[in-house]
Amino acid sequence: MVKMERRQIKWSLTLLLYFAVFSSPLINIPRIEATMRTRPIVISIVPKSLDNPMFIEVKEAAELTAQRLNVVLEWVGPFKMDVDTQIQIIEGLIRRKVDGIAVSCSDEERLRAVIDQAVASGIKVVTMGADAP
Picture 1: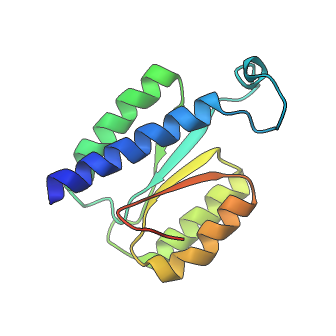
Picture 2 (picture 1 turned 180 degrees about the vertical axis):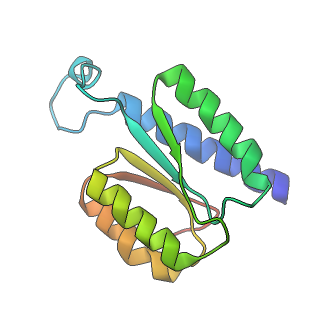
């Protein structure tokens, strides 16, 4: 079960990274222009908690993929599982206008509004281990 969840998380992160790199933020703009950005692509990973050993392996895989794609990868989250801190972190990422967020939801219902807000602001969002929203 844990091995399958790790695999799903790795694939989710990999897909998010590839999607962020190869998608254009505007319709009808050639993909070549998307690669001529003035700032690097920033993907933020928000785990349930930083003290979860399962995410160490996931973090290593995500960092390798980010290096290959020349993407800035941030690993931000509460040290202990705390949904209020996750919400505050995601709100900060929205204000910073990161390109993508991968979040492991500690409480799907409570995170729904802030995830919807991120999507509405144009940020690509992937949830890991939960179907939210």
